Length: 530
Image 1 (tube, helix red, strand yellow):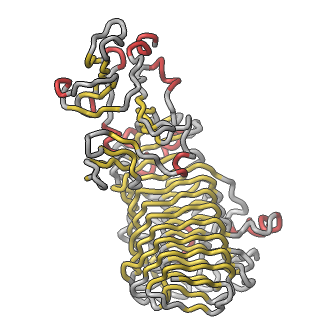
Image 2: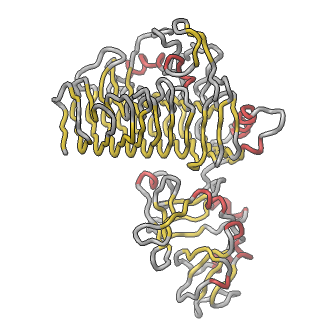
Image 3: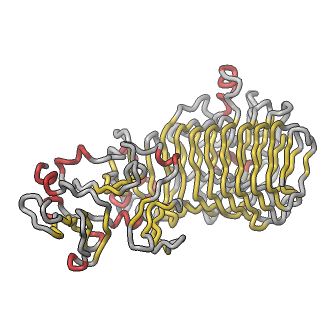
């Protein structure tokens, strides 16, 4: 360790860059460091200025790989996207969400760019941005002053100094074997990591599944250029919280559901989740034999379903061949759902559904074509002891509803939806219509403090409205149960109305609605500008 400190003494200038060989390193006038070679075997070099050279080194560039080791940045190459620069930049480096991390300016200097506050709050040690490998080892970071800092610690004795994001990291490919189904291999992998507090499972191979993948608290699933495909006739979620254990009885509803925390399902923007080519069929008592798709068939039609989850992130994935709501959440908080592509063409083919009790969620950069609502904030808090079937609906789509009465008795706002931010949604409405975004309330459950910004309808068919604030699917709506809504910069193409409402709302402001043809039954409580 002492040798390392002396070798890097005085070297606190910014990162120089990757070069083909040491012979191409430019001369410097101040101490600096660089990485030399290809991404898989990069060597660290330090530049010492005459008069300030540590013992054992010489003025100029010095190869420090004998002291510090070499570094494999190929994972970083997969995670960070390089693209043609903007604003005079030679090259921009962005993360998977498209946020600018750093860039090469017109003079060839590498400049860091602060990330937004939400990202800062997730990081430690006052870093603006951390770059880690898949095992969570810190490679380098941007400090609070916007400077790049290397973390050249590559031997076991320095492991305690690393920023370890996980206690265990595994690759799913290590658990696959002939004679064992992919679903069983996934269960084996999850069982393998289960004793650890912070778990990372890298899906690095394509898999075909027969049942839901059940995730416990403090679990991250990274989809790395892979496809998760449901086999034909599977009737189950793709991902579900481990706190919801269903049975072979489709009508089963648990009396209570335990809470979960900190679950992430993240992709690389190339990974896909695809439903069945052939859906399971059921002899509906009224409608006869039909595919088990849509609201009539309940929770198992959701591709992703979580209940009572606090802290979750879902991004970088493309969904197709959905069977109902694509992502559904009940009684969840602190969710960040972003950079998803959702394509559906089935009955009740919603994109993202926030149901009763969801709070403090952010949804942004969502695109695709949905046969029903792209984003739904739906608070239908019926606390009666419902039994199914209800009309044509055979099974429940809200698995926590037997808890609702006790939750609402303990806290009157327990089933409200509040503090939701929705940004940058690009939606095409499929043939069945639906809406871009809805706020729906009944049974005294409120939808409050929802903001929508940059919501665009690329195309659509048979839509009554692109944005809709309303009551329905039950009774008990009270005046102003929908309140404190902000809507800005909405572009509707084919919907009959840009904004529609059939109920008395409070403190709803809308700005820059295009084309601005609205249908508002109770105008008191609405302010529309531009």
